Image (cartoon, rainbow, N blue to C red; front, side):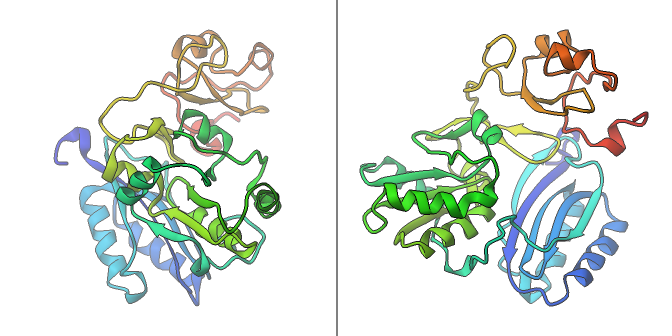
Length: 314
């Protein structure tokens, strides 16, 4: 952790807990970050906190110590990875009405049973009859990596998950089906598993700490591909053990797990591409976008497009 290649840490965590004055917590975080080398994307609400951040090893340790001085936050499950640079362009801390966009008053404290990675792995290896392994992530996350045998809801937005759960109740016996649910860091499952229980599913389990925690403790066993993350890394391996890509370049079809945002400002679509194809179309998702009037300069090393710090002319 002391080498220049591992100077920084990427930290992820969430906690559902009542916060009486979330705006005050936002201000406290901003003040704490002013004197430290930290970048972040943190949302705080009356429901709790959802955070992804990066910083020097020293700054991240100071932050964790600072948070756990508050009795409300002593039980946070911090998930940490080493990285060679900051994973966010700036320190962003905001108030958000909902930690997870659902538009449904699900109680996270009435969700499925939390399962540690070792037990989760064991459950995956058991007889899968009457088991529904549910991946509650987006399509672009699923494409580059998922657990073997998992099912992903065919939804264009997860605000429609309540409707999907009702459909599942018609397809599966809610009393006999064992539901195993997972997501990137665990926060979506807190609410989605509560919805499953609301409609009558009785045997609902959620992967504690999400795929991130599973990778830290169990590596790549039973996992295919990489993990999509919502920071500048975009896709990361679960462990040092290399995994072959399970997705393909959208243009030539070669195995590929690298995402680009289309360089056409009026498209900006997220697409998979090998380096050769991306270079051939200057980072655009199609020849049509390549001819568009507002095209950003091509970046050899793709990062999520953020207007303010990557496009000074637009």
